[in-house]
Amino acid sequence: MTKKAELDSIDLKILQALQRDGRLSNADIADAVALSPSPCLRRLRRLESDDVIQGYRVQLNRQAIGLGMTVYVQVKLQDHGIESVAGFEQALLGMPQVINAHTVSGSADYLLEVVVSDLPDYDRWVRQIQLLRMVREIESNFALREVKAQAPLPL
Image: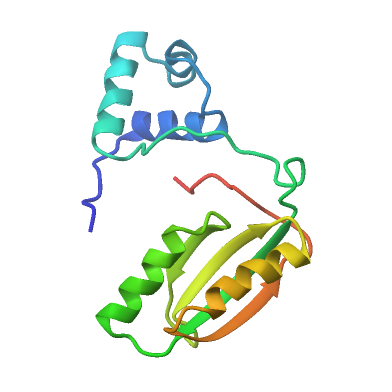
């Protein structure tokens, strides 16, 4: 488990600014948090080295790139043995359609977020999962409409 970082109010302001716009320059961030550029850059580098900031990436419009269907998939495994769990998780790593995967408590073992172009594309993907011997049950929940997405973390 990662140790919780020691963050002061300026660090939090930096993180909030970056969550709003990850393309801000150091000078823009420094202005936003009332610091000069050098100390601001030192703080940014520390936040990166402490693994608070794990990276910077572009947020794509799924519809615009032809991945307009989101499916939340609950998966139950046959058993929870080391080989089954490791095999299933390794298979997930090779499936680009799975953009988020979590082990969960409750009736399912895993909750997956899957993005595909359409229902036939999802059918092709789900057939891959069905071939995995450790999978016992699959339940699919199709997203009908996006209400809130990619929200900033509550700092």
